[in-house]
Image (cartoon, rainbow, N blue to C red):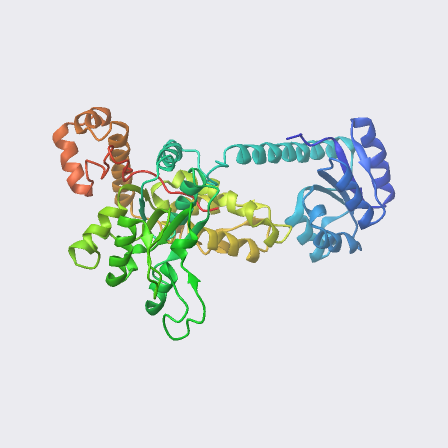
Amino acid sequence: MMESSRQIMAIGNHSAFQATIEELSHQGWSVFHPESLPEALAIIGKHDCRIGLAFLEEDTASLPLEMERASELAALHWVVLVEDVERLSDKARDLIYSYCFAYRAAPLDIHSVNVLLEGALGMAKLQDRYDAYREGHQNDDLRMVGDTPVMQYLYRTIHKVASVDAPVLITGESGTGKELTARAIHELSSRRQGPFNVVNCGALPAGLIQSELFGHEKGAFTGANQRKTGIIENSQDGTLFLDEIGDLPLDMQVNLLRFLETLTVFRVGGLKEIPVDVRVLAATHVDLEKAVERGEFREDLFHRLNVLQVQTPALREHPEDIEPLANFFFHRFSSDKPAKVRGFSHESLVVMRQHRWPGNIREMVNRVRRSMIMCEHRLISPSDLGLERRNGHSRDTDSLQQVRDTAECEAIKAALVRNKHKVLHAARELGISRVTLYRLLEKHGIDRSGGSDETTGAFPSTSKTIQLT
């Protein structure tokens, strides 16, 4: 990405301002001085102009209005010169606070103005580098955000799972990105040219599930006025994603099991089997093994679906990705925000790190998007996010013991993953005895096997969340 040039958009007609503009040309600046808003927008469209310089007089009313009307103008890094800031209107003061990099009051000298412009240019260059970094560190294939070692491990594992054609069970809390995981597997597989169809098993009307999945023939039941092809059949040569598979009624689980065993479907009212070449991915936020024990899910169907397993852990388990995610969604929904909103305050980022995110990525999307619309200042505050602090603490801040326990638990999980779940090696890395590690495993309820089976490709429980985009 090309760095910002030393080009300035200058707005204002005061005599002192005219003299300042003339002197800036001797400091290596190229100054554009448009006479109207359309002319200013045309200059921005043709030139690499990232810096704005304006002279704001007491009775100036047009500049604030133009800033609100033209997001292209608001995107510049503005330096404002004023005669007397105390005599400015509330509207003008709000403009300086919301949109501007810096301001300087009279008396004006070219050195001080040049210093402010150099600072604004430095900020523009920093933004260019940040945007380039953000673009370069986004996994374009998977449309995910995160550059931590565990995220890189997840990317590699998804590539492995995508290279085979076996069923995959994706587990994790609500809002952790299970559908995005399924889409990533599909897009990296040999079936990427085929359809990717999604069925929410918990949202289908009970009486229509069989017809929706398998289709029906004309006259099969009242209201069946024509033949309908089911979602499974429509997924030919592609991928079928069964979301919330744990909510599928038991009677329909039998039909789905038969399809997985024979790869054929019977339309409702049909007389012949129809072969279908489809890869099945399923997802659930419930523990299917416990559902099997309760008799709520068929054990044979569970094993059919659970050939490979991907787990999408909660956002609170990888807080190092919270800031990159927040910035990603801020840029993604930038068209929804007022032009003056430029990002998150430092306090907001701190509070977001402390929040437990019970709704995971979905909650973050909602909070960030709402805060961008409601924010009335330059930077988004914790109150805009609905995470305001109380008495110096975040609403969701844990006790010191909880923080310690969480850190201890995550350190143990990470050590187990790095050492392929060999307790002795993990204990040596952590600098504790094997007996102590066994005690800590029991304390935190950690499965020392990680719940993984390398022969089937299942993922360890510490793999990190697939990010929504």
